[in-house]
Image (cartoon, rainbow, N blue to C red):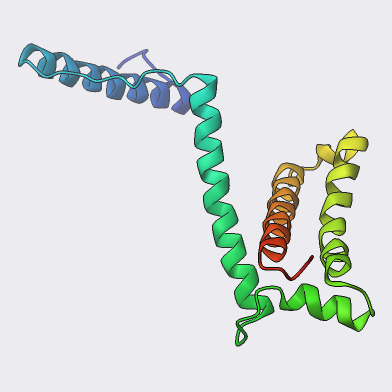
Length: 151
C-alpha cells in the first residue's frame, strides 16, 4: 500500500510537465543530429505598424466591395447610395456624402470624447469598424472628385 496520493490537479500539472520534458528531449535530439532552429526576430514598432496598415488596407478593400454590392448590386453606379440620398433631399452630391460619413465621424468623436464608451468588450471592434467605414467614405469622396461627380 502506498502513501503517495496526488490530487487530480497535481496529476494534470505532472502530465503537463512530462509533456514539456518530452518535447525538450526531442528538441535536444534534433539539435544533436544537426538540426537548425530559426527563431523569428522581434518586430520593430515600425514593422508592426506596417503589418497593421496592410491588414487595414485589405479590410478596406473588402469593405468597399461589400458596400458596393449591397448599395448598387445591379447598377454600375458606385456612388448611387450617396447621390440618391442627396437627390431625395434636394441637396448636391457632396451633401449626400456628408450625411453618410458624418454618422461614422460622430461615433469616432464620441468614442474619443467619452472614455466610458470604451469599457465595453466590443468597443474596440466597433470603433475600428466605424473608422474603416469612414475611410471607405473618404476614398469614395476622392473618387467622386476625380470622376468629376463633385466639382
